[in-house]
Image: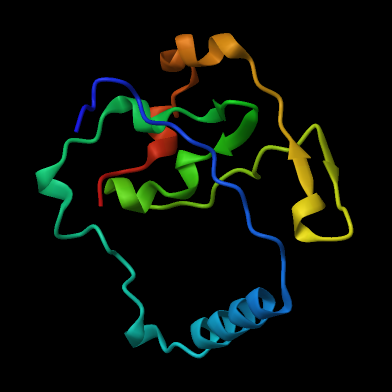
Length: 134
């Protein structure tokens, strides 16, 4: 296969059905029923030495793909990067949010400045916020 050109596509969410909602309910009941001993609390513990954590993962801000803008909060997942997790700041507040009659009609809009990513080093978590290495 030729992988020279990027392969990008949007995925379209299927319509909400009763069956999908029943499945979500079933998954929630299963998760709620787990005991602490049945949860993998530190899934990356055996893989940290295999990969180097690039400074870019500590970029804190919004990420954009096509017309979708999402907040990225590395301070909320520091444990995955091998750091001691502390209580993070509150998440970014959206510019606007609208709840429609179904999940498909729910929309949240965050601000995005195109040049933030060009200057990603200016938006890194400060070393004291990253915490100590675990």
